[in-house]
Image 1 (cartoon, rainbow, N blue to C red):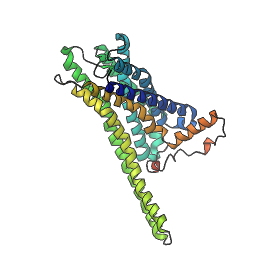
Image 2: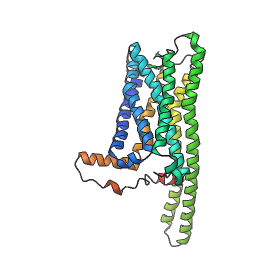
Image 3: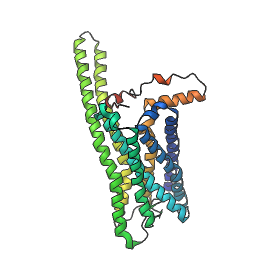
Image 4: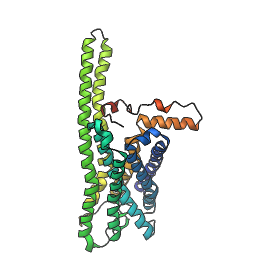
Length: 339
């Protein structure tokens, strides 16, 4: 194995370790915290972390072996099972992120009716559809024997062996990515842009109140006034930054791999081995980043983790009942959701 292959293997090991630990922490927080379990969004977060954890444990190690050995590391039946799981889990995580964005959209745009529009039953129905949708395509690919080891991606995945089936495989691949990646991306863009619009409206209203207050306080020190103005600017930027992370991480991590798989359908195109591995590692990196994007950087999860550490170390615990989950961060003030 050359230096480039060793670096790619090292990158995958790093992604695997971070993904394993971070997703376990999210599930631990869900089990430990009653407040988190009460939130409807917790259903989507648990499903997302559970799928990411399975992808980390069942798929990443075999891809790592494929990189290290430069050949198929598994037997035929095991390879098909791993490829089946990868297709299912990847699609399920995309749809889980779309469900999270729908939950956020309803909470922000329709806060007064959130409890009636998004109940636990509704969340379970959405996740049921996600599982059914995600199972359909790998079952079809397994039926047509389109799951096999691909040396380009060093993993067991969707792979065409017979050229006579290229047209059918092409249609299947396009429909699969259109109903998983593209559908999820459209939902993410629509819902989060609506959320951003509402967040900017609330930030603008806060800015007006702040300016009126500053006008009335004629004796206010210039440094205090400047800090208020700087806070206004930061408040407007936080909402945009958060939405950009949600959508941007989805596109950056999944986009290169999806585009590569679509270009690969052209019979005259050959995908570079290193680019295939890099694009695959990018999709795996989403499993490592999701816990931080959606959970662990929020104050509620930080508090739960601190309480868990204090309990392990037998330190005095702060009462969890005094925590107000609506005060996640100052940024969430503009992206407030009704839990």
